Length: 306
Ligand code: R5P
Picture 1 (tube, protein in one colour):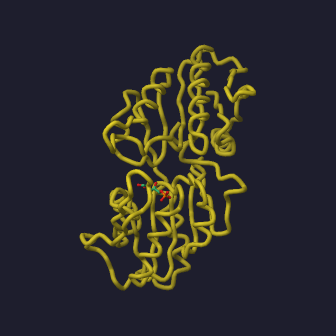
Picture 2: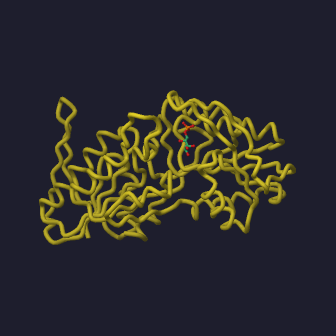
Picture 3: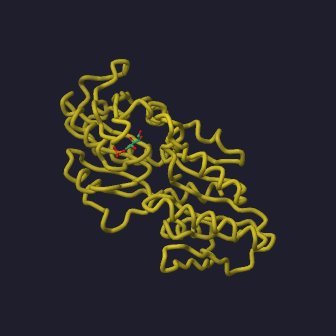
């Protein structure tokens, strides 16, 4: 098997290759002065199973084009199979028409991925559990939740009274995720916040605790907020502020995908959250790192599932 990396997340690809007791196979990726990309497979791949690892955040368009070209190049060079590991699947939030006249961007991405000849997709913590149904090729949908559960158990050792802790979904869309995590943590109580966004600007318009969150414990003092991704950081910031009004004294955040757009770094560092745990599904560049951040690796999970 040969493992290749696009240019979006080489550190993760290197870790995956290492877990598979191999090293990355070389790829030539050239960027023309006008921004177009050319890719070339250097090693012989005839009849071989191949894996390409590429996340599609921060420069989604460029990284998707690169991925399409790499899959095409591997197929044209005779690869028997191409498994694409796309830990963060860009455009996944545009999975339906929110307002008349919009494109369903995710469907366009899926059609293109399939048409270039990818045989299987491995991805992490998709925004919606319905997304795998949109694919006609096999898709392996992995989750960082087991990694988060282990970390929560580890840091819980430092909590004086674990019973004071509650899991929180910052929006109703994350309720399934939080239920699964609760089961992994001996049924830790959980609640959900109801978040409303302006469909045009994306601004959070209102935020309140879901009244149906029957397990809401007004005595809870510590919150573990879990989300699939952090983009601008406004969801987390608003959630922490709301929880403080309900008596929460300390909050931790666990999110799979550190998209970290705009001013996320400062919003999160200056928010009242104690610590932010994310994964390396997306590479966090040095300039986006901040003191409260800790990155957990999903490389082992990927390697186990290739
Ligand atoms: C939205 O439904 C997602 O689950 C995240 O909560 C959201 O994408 C985070 O975005 P932001 O960090 O910009 O508030």
